[in-house]
Image (cartoon, rainbow, N blue to C red):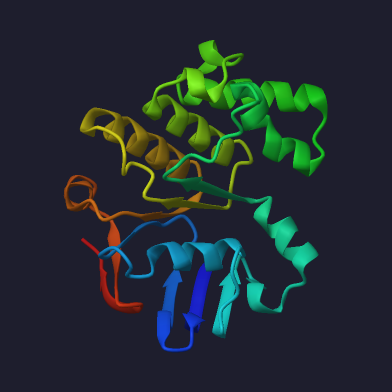
Length: 221
């Protein structure tokens, strides 16, 4: 599902954010991406989402080479991907319904189909009763669940998450992790970046470790 071959990314000539990364993640895998701050985790996720291009190497997702795709084709591929950010990136002037519906509107889905899918997805994350609220009326944990619902509503082939529980307390973290496990059980390939060692211990999965922009570990429990 995800393949990287000799991928490097540098924002400045003297400093490589990623250096010669090669890895493969199979369809349906749940993989953690870890490493210290500045190791390159966020950069790697941006490359997979097509928000950045590598300086060198090949990135293949679902059989498509991102490094050779036109911008319009990358946009089409993104529509089958979900991404969850640590800072939520919700649209504060839109309701919870409108935030979760947004990716389906981009896909051009019919209004009835959108309404049904959004309600079902908000039920999955336990927020169907707050469908008409706005993000700033919700707690941090609830906002993160909305962000996850927005990612899940498209039934993503690939689900990427960048420190999705970094600002949440342990109880809410467990709830959020259950949502990612559910998405994985339904067929999404999940890559979740975290520096939380306790999470890695409680949820044993394959762990990719970055340090200084290099892949220094690939362990499967």
